[in-house]
Each structure stands twice: as structure tokens, then as C-alpha cells.
View 1 (cartoon, rainbow, N blue to C red):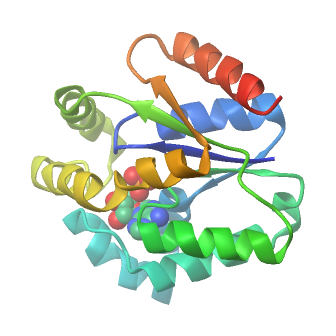
View 2 (view 1 turned 180 degrees about the vertical axis):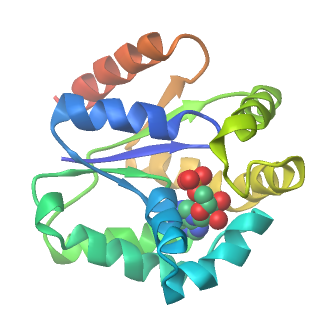
Length: 190
Ligand code: AMP
């Protein structure tokens, strides 16, 4: 099973992906977490990524694709994956399709967590008080939301055309959203 959890920054992708990974027995790939691990470990990649992330910008597609392709080749990924935070641009989505087709695999569903912008902003500011993330400050948050609308949101129609997009209301109690996702994914994958 290949599941994409899609949404704006602060929409709850990480929280829901963790639960879904446990529920469906899938390997959770968060590109944001992978990049932050590189930064923490001071790798060359981490040093390159740091500037982009702190400014609220996306890291270049080719770099991101290289990291993702490597992650998909690990034994842990063989039984199915949840992609959290990837793809974020049309070229990333196209390249993912190519990559999967080469291995005779395909995306099963794209869960879109839908949350209004003012709520996203509130959540991210709140998270910034304890997350320690270099991009959870007002300037970077504003830029991340701008980037989401211009570069990432077009993926909704990309996946709608493929028949994979499942919109889910991302506001309300975490447990309710999770139950809603599970129900929809099971229905979609029948
Ligand atoms: P996240 O933890 O998913 O919010 O990601 C944090 C930051 O990592 C993003 O704001 C980007 O700078 C970078 N990042 C994560 N995933 C991607 C991606 N698929 N493409 C480009 N940059 C990414």
C-alpha cells in the first residue's frame, strides 16, 4: 500500500501519518523529519537544506527526489509506505509516478487534510512555542503558507485527475479526523 498524506503546513500530516502507519502497518516517511535528522547530524545535505528550511522555502526537487528514492529502496519500505510531506511540487509528483511505475507499483490514495489558513497559522504559532523548529516563527510560517498555495496546492487537481484524491476535514478532535481518514481510505481501496 502506498498512501500519501497531503496538506498545508500545520494541517496535522505528521500526527495523522504516525497513527495511520501503526494502523495499516506501513513505514512512515516524513521528508521534513529526514531533513531535520540530516541537519541535526551536520551532514553535507543537512547544511545545504538548513537555509531553505529556515527561510520557509522548499528544498530543490532534484535533491528531495534523491533522498526519497533512497528511502523507498530501504527494506523497511518494501511492505508499503505513508508519504508525509512528499510530494510538494508537480515535478516531484511526476517523478514519483515514474519511480513507482518502474517498479510496477502505484499510489493507492492521497488523503488531503483540509484546514483553513487562519487555523493553520494559529496552530503553527502555537507549535512554535515548544517545537524548537527553525521554521515555526511568524516570517517563515507566512512564507511556508505562500509556498503551499503557489507550489503544493496544484497537486490537488493533479491527484483529482488520477482519481486518488480524498478530501478530509482536518479540523476538530484528532481521533475523529483519524477515524474519518480510515473509513475513507478503506472505502477508496475496496
Ligand atoms: P515539514 O516537516 O513537512 O513541514 O517540512 C519542513 C521543511 O522541509 C519544509 O518547509 C521544506 O523546507 C522541507 N521539505 C520537506 N519536504 C519537502 C519536499 N517534499 N520538497 C521540498 N522541501 C521539503
